[in-house]
Image (cartoon, rainbow, N blue to C red):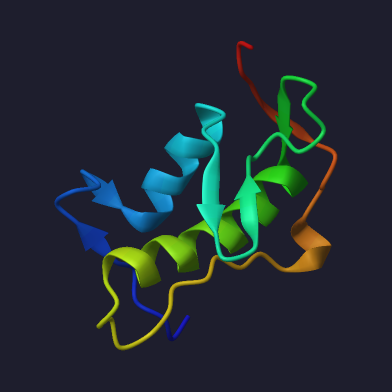
Length: 94
């Protein structure tokens, strides 16, 4: 609740929305730990847990790489008791 939400004209959206669109497009992303996608089990279904983990990794990296002078990070958060990790939320075409 104390973090800012960052936007950049190059994204055409905020960092959170850009990352969701990347997840739903099954876009491969890269950070200092390597490459990753939202659909980690490659079954064509993005579940809430997969999306949450993707966003937790992608959004801070996106902000840091695009806006290195940002005064704070942006890290998506959802209380664990509200996270139905297996709930399918998006079907993408492979």
